Length: 390
Image 1 (cartoon, rainbow, N blue to C red):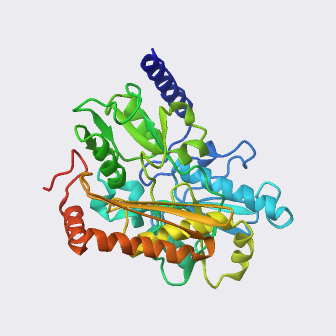
Image 2: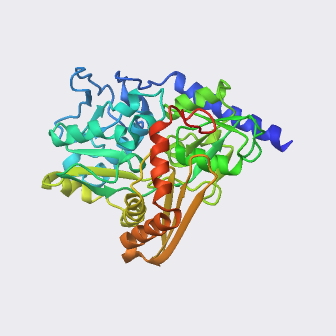
């Protein structure tokens, strides 16, 4: 009975999300459809203008724009852009308008959005979602960029920095399946869709008899594939589902012990030019200190391990009453080897904690493990089954 209830609940959630999408515009490849389809009801109507293919930027015209926001064009990225604009309007209503009408949103196409047929580990990792935004920022086409922090490389272009992080959403992953209630319950031979080596490795550690296939595209595309029974299950970040009010499709929320999330998962970061004092004045007012220190600790761990979307690395930090707890994980792509580190200490030591945990894992795993790991991700042709080299 519980399984039947779970199947009905999940399929109903998927159908609701898909029917909602039928009347909404979806961003695909290099074509940007009207982005106000994903805006809150208070957003300015009819505000999209298409830019030429050369620039790759579509500005949403604001009345006498005083500040220009750069973002990817996916529904989730746009939801995050609108959240940022709303917070700017609340902080500076007299300067930027009560509805943020003086904040211009510019949609920038990225390589990661266009190359959806391959796993990120094959085509360059997380930087594919940010490099075009970096260029737009450095060439003064936009004043700041809004990012999902888990897509941001550990090292940014000279002349830019991460000024602000918004309050973090729930960092956990969500398991979604119309047939099964957990990863462990998937029978041998089941197919689970995920392009993330981090997720694949932890999935295979729990259930080595299933197959992991490359599964990219925006949240809506992945849910549509699941509803079409292309795969038996998938995992998505809970934060994105919450930001788009799409939690009805969730079968189970996975705690850290079941699936340790990606570094910076659930966090929105804002990148600026380091010499742009006018923009920094606006952006710094939005910063959430706890989120920024937690994420910075995780990114310190990642940088120590030279990690990216090419490698199965996870880390999460949490601060309570001035004490930070960090959990870090590195594993082989097939889930057979796992190395963990934990730290707890004063929040003031956040960078040192991340670095120290990373160094512990490097020592325990040995340098050959990381050499083999890098060789693996260079050789792999697709994240299409239980990982094997080409």
